[in-house]
Length: 168
Ligand SMILES: Cc1cc2nc3c(=O)[nH]c(=O)nc-3n(C[C@H](O)[C@H](O)[C@H](O)COP(=O)(O)O)c2cc1C
Image (cartoon, rainbow, N blue to C red; front, side, top):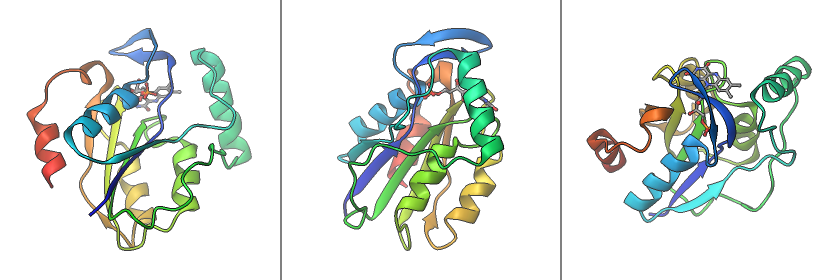
């Protein structure tokens, strides 16, 4: 059984425990690396063709524009197929209570039928928000497992729940 970790993460200015903080490395990327260290999975970073601005307000404007225009956010190709993988960890930050549009582009690009999907996210509020129901809708034909959510400022802490979740 082959496993893939696919994730999107943005470095730059981010709210971290209520304080705008510059992240050299995004929180979700840190979590993806922790999962990688606990599994023998392949890892794929979902990188936008046009990078999101490091500046928080500029990033907010870009996201607003994408939402208004219904933009299909393109990501850098590099993963031709996911056919060889039985299990996919799918990671993202929570933006406006759901996953970023680029995740939708990723989901649209491959066939996840019958695959085990393990979503993970980092956030401020501690939950998947609406992402949970959107994931259920998108992965109707997959085996979608319960996800792992962690607040960004806790991502480097030891969490026995992470290891437990990975075993599922
Ligand atoms: C534009 C924007 C919107 C956000 N919206 C939410 C939100 O609705 N709920 C939440 O819990 N966190 C929200 N956050 C916080 C991020 O989810 C959190 O900082 C996350 O750990 C960032 O991950 P990254 O560094 O991998 O991008 C938002 C962050 C940004 C930049």
